Image: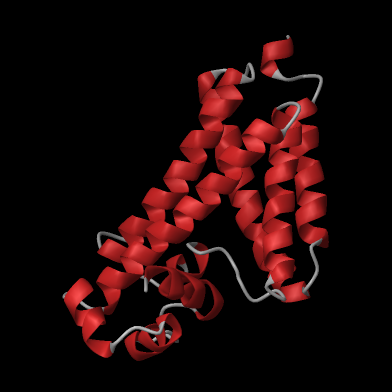
Length: 186
């Protein structure tokens, strides 16, 4: 049920995804939704956000192990995101961003879950940048820029039904990381 909810949320968003639709997509009995998620749709949505966020983190971790250097790893992460988007016929956006755009910022379980996932990706990338030789503060800044750029590029790619925005943005991020005036190279 969580996987079905994650899939529907990334395609249709929170408002357009009803609990009955999730149950039907999952192929589970109606009663199981209330049994497993007694607090309703929001509780299930939080679990789905965490599930989708873990998939994004897994792709990032995979890219970090596959890349020849940090710039290549970031480029690979963007490429993986592009492949996933294209494979869904440009229907599957980010499993967190679609919901994050619909919820009211501030203390609520959905906004908190979205923020926690984005923070997890940013922290993972910041650690990798530090290991690659960037100072800690600069690593945090660059990780924020890269995650934000990925999210924006995914949106443009989804709207244009082309991965071009992801490719161009990945190249820009790689260039930023390869720049000769990097702080660790001075």
